[in-house]
Length: 238
Image (cartoon, rainbow, N blue to C red):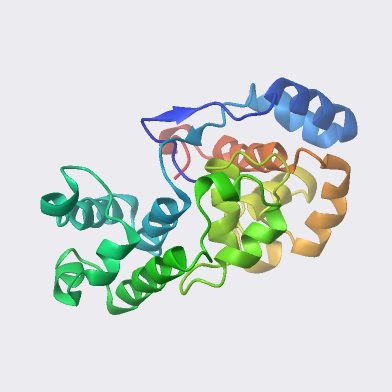
């Protein structure tokens, strides 16, 4: 589950209403909610879809601290054009020499992905924030997964944590699958998790039919199930 940012805001929906609905619709999920407490899901503020996806590309397959350092160097490289701490525009990324992007720590594939993202932001494939807010979840996924390096999971995280969409179930997410297995399939917290013990997406989708229209909140609680299963010394989620 992505970490909340320093600048964050509440979701545009009533989490208390969602909790009441989910607890009534699914008793086992309700017991998890009782254990985990109130939903404290927060949304990232201040990022355009282009900026959010650029950051997602940088962070892919990297430890958070390493990715944050690369992302900071990427933005710092454009300070002369954009100002300190200001994210480069799509045109800036397209015009930028490849060595500058590579010197920030970006791999060859991520450099290509950022350029493709920039091109698709300019041609309208990646919508503006005003336009994307009027689009359905499925339409957003269809548009954004056309970008090199952007898969369904990345867009689902954006839907939940940037756009505040209430009914997203990321069935490919490891934490959601593990949380489902802990909550509904009898997986023990002390059991070493192997792929065959994780929930299957089809099984998750069947049970989650009763969670609509609040599957984003249900997903948040499945991540919390993973946190609750950790020994106290391990602390919170990544």
